[in-house]
Length: 398
Image (tube, rainbow, N blue to C red):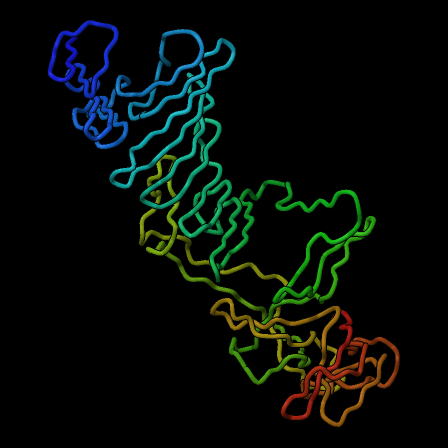
């Protein structure tokens, strides 16, 4: 081995004081001009530069702890740093792999010497995602490019089982819990309050409490709302003249939700395999055309019969979340109901259809098939242009 110090070769003295040193040309270089050290390079470009042009175990920098000289039987050929506990009863490797050029991945891998219990944290450059793996390098969690956090799935597609938390404004499924195994009898979500009675879920709008689901003893209460259902008009149109609180009646026709075939597009986060390679391509079928099963949701119309026994609830609003002209219909619980101009109601009155989309007092205190609701307050919350107005009520299982 040749040792050169300040131009002099063959020095063997153990005490060396010098500005620059070179061992075997590139094995070790001390650059006193730039205060740098190079291993495998004669021109270090950092404080410490380790540069090898091939991918072999000899190119790995090892930090070893414990006894024994033999290396693990198998080491990734692109491992840049290996930290190994070589104790007799416990052995753990940490390798940092830098192969991100060309859209690859930067990895931190964990495992024993046999890789039987391998796991890792991998950053995929081409899809800008962080993956977390356990148990034989199986992906368990992912953080996507927009901040989505995925558990047990690699795509935000809500037909794929797993959990998605999305921080993207306007996301179609900001919180999605999907179980795809139709044979499973297990629960999808558990809410377990320990120690005391109280709220399980709170519902807010603009930071104001609007409702909750709470538990007291063995009773679960749904607070501050009503039961509702989806419906449509007979011709599937959207009639914006129908206003909140309007009395609706049932029709025989059932609602059909038919969906066209959808395809993977460039804006989608494509699912990938364990190596980060997409398993589908833009333009592939994402979901075939289908029609949703519907055994119970019929269409509706504005009630046009006085004392209508076929009353179905009151109109709340139009659903704006998709291209279907769906109506949200309140059926049971706290709500407001529309009363015609000139009609007076009292607290405790039972109401029936007036035959024009409004309600009026029933005339007796017997709950009948035509009964829609019971007035709970005469406080008017809104008055429409035609003089009709809204008062609070409890809907009677319309």
